[in-house]
Image (cartoon, rainbow, N blue to C red; front, side, top):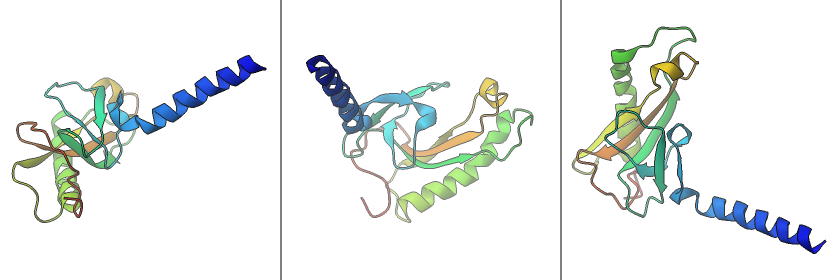
Length: 144
């Protein structure tokens, strides 16, 4: 019986620790949510990102998670993803408000062709700085 109690205690510690430190764990970029702060990269292919609490050093913050408007079976849009930029730009402006910090820009993650062909349409829009400089607070309007 004592062994069961010890095992349950260890499981509880792992679960609670994962919940408490979620903002500091590396995770799948496709699981980002609006308001998540993370480290962006200059890499062309991103699968994992490092999460951070928005009050600690980070260089990007998610402002919109949505789906690209195309049906399953539609051809890969490649350069047409740029047209989603207006959607991201509008979301970024709404998120940060009418007085954004100087040098703040928006960008987005989009599915690779292999994922597109499997039906993935998720687009993740985020704000960052031109030189990936570190931010130590949320860029959400009213929190600055």
